[in-house]
Amino acid sequence: MGLDIVYYKRFRMEINLAGRRFPPAPLPKYYSLQAWDDSLMDIFALTKFNCFRGELDTNVFPSLSTLEGCRQLMTDIAAKPGFLPGATWLAVYSPPGSPAAEYCGTIQGIRDKFGLGAIQNVGISSPHRGRGLGTCLILRCLEGFRRAGIFLAHLEVTAQNERAIELYRRLGFVIVKTIYKTISDDE
Ligand SMILES: CC(C)(COP(=O)(O)OP(=O)(O)OC[C@H]1O[C@@H](n2cnc3c(N)ncnc32)[C@H](O)[C@@H]1OP(=O)(O)O)[C@@H](O)C(=O)NCCC(=O)NCCS
Image 1 (tube, rainbow, N blue to C red):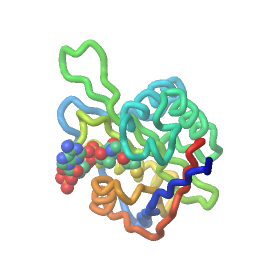
Image 2 (image 1 turned 135 degrees about the horizontal axis):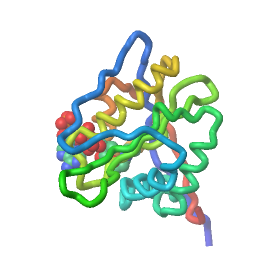
Image 3 (image 1 turned 180 degrees about the vertical axis):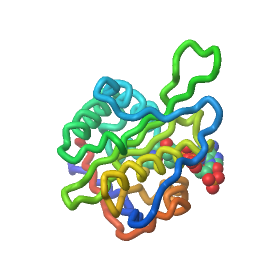
Image 4 (image 1 turned 90 degrees about the horizontal axis):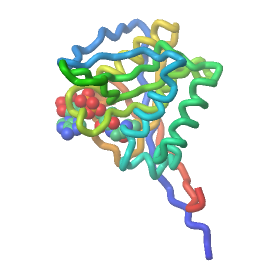
């Protein structure tokens, strides 16, 4: 019985923030963005879980595939010394007459050990995709980095995730490096 190792090809993408501003993109009707607050930890975890359910990246990061794993990821992110509440947002859908707001997207930002802005996860739940919400969340996060004095932001994306890569390119991110992430079948 051998240990199976799977390799996932990933790209590091970067965007230069120096001398730039990121005005908010218009949100579609009935949507809003909500900033991080410690009391929202569980909502962030649940939203992350919903956004990544059944997606490619649950294979690359098995924690993303369970609610408990998403809770742990969010707890770890929020506990990092470089965690940036101003780059960490939820997308909320609240059409008139609906009994409760629906949390349909999330992004988190941290200042990494090099002083650069690291986007941790961006996700929009599937019924809400293709409406510009991913764009709005990324722009809000980049503006949060910029306000924190950060001049370069980066993220990692799985090479097969063409729609995400296209979105990042459109916003000005460029691929700077290819990374192979290994996952063993006991993870
Ligand atoms: C990547 C992701 C965040 C994009 O969110 P989004 O809200 O759909 O993004 P936007 O609407 O701003 O842009 C998506 C682009 O795909 C296009 N698109 C068309 N149909 C679409 C659909 N059914 N669903 C999603 N995007 C669609 C959009 O038109 C847009 O391109 P355009 O601006 O050139 O028109 C979202 O697809 C997602 O959560 N995927 C699963 C999680 C994931 O892989 N996250 C990335 C981790 S690195």
